[in-house]
Image (cartoon, rainbow, N blue to C red):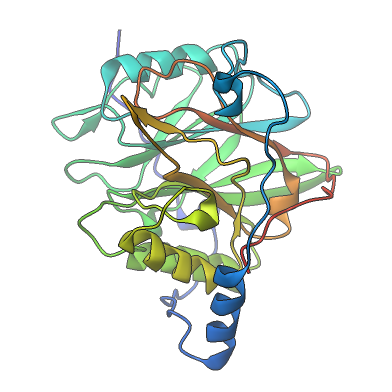
Length: 305
């Protein structure tokens, strides 16, 4: 049975302090132009598989399953394509997990209501109560507060609290859908990035970009990809994707359009980023990674500067 998503309103005192938000620019000064040039000209290196069959080379290992991590927060990123079956498959995946955050694009909706996600033991958060939600976030086993000041049909953001090194800490996680027929990134995405920069808050963004660029390991570029790559290069966001594994697969079409972005130093707390081989019942594959609760610096992190 599928139930209507339940929303929990959060006061501004619980979510975050009230701060004036300014939109970000596209790097109009010489410093930003230099940073963009260095990022886009650099030939980034990717971790390529050295063995295994073709399925494993593309990241679709049938034996690979999504698991919960005791020492970290499990994060899943998925576009459900407004599909009931894909929603049911996701709920089955997270049923046995103790703590998880799911960054969802294009959830299953009916008459403006998100269905099948909010139920006992987990909560669903959407950016806007308007028609046609194209993003939401599901949380289980964690202290999570909605950030309604940034919410739109294409952007949902929450503040997640957890302990790291025996100290209470927090991070901002966002689910973003970037439609083909709109300017990217939206004003609200820029505002969220600025808010996190001004308040020294770590930020992780899971997004369906609908765009192609070699910076995030796609095999080709398109106009939307050039715009988004320019924008990312003007910020301090890191691209977490590694390996060039396509997560959008429809017939003979394969592409890398779903990306994970994070600000330092939380980018170094992200481990085991991968494209799952589990059947999602969607044309998009699950992206999974772990947000470590105990700080452990990684030896390699790609930055497209």
